[in-house]
Image (cartoon, rainbow, N blue to C red):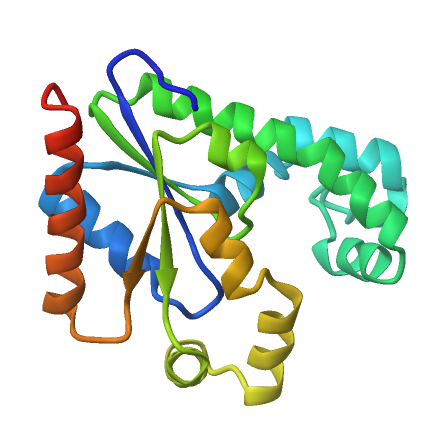
Length: 205
């Protein structure tokens, strides 16, 4: 378990459509957390000139580069989708860079509380957090939310869900679970309870 100075590093994970953004919004607005989203960090590092960009282009070759030098994400996705070995290698090249950048941002944040959100539960993620929460929402509600908020078809949503970790795997990595099936206020009460519990454990936070 990793700590940076006196900072409290909270990890948030959960499947697509579970409503993690709702949790992040509450933590930021109501409790003053600095928010870091691993997907956004990963995207930034794929911009021309950045570390992940160079690592991926060096490995996959010029076919993944557009004329304007930006990464052709569609071509890259097609390559690694059809080649598990290349996909694994791209992950090995980029994931450490993402976590390095995320932790640098956490260290430099002026807030004493930082929340890092990522959809993939891993030991690397777990080890960097003081606590980790799993955002649980039923498959039925996730399908409804993805159709309403993102315009996804049921087929697309189910395919993404099947490619992600299952409930048991998420639970195994996390300290607590938030049931995000209900109203905003119900979710907010759970968050307040968990943070109150945390204060009782470490009054200095």
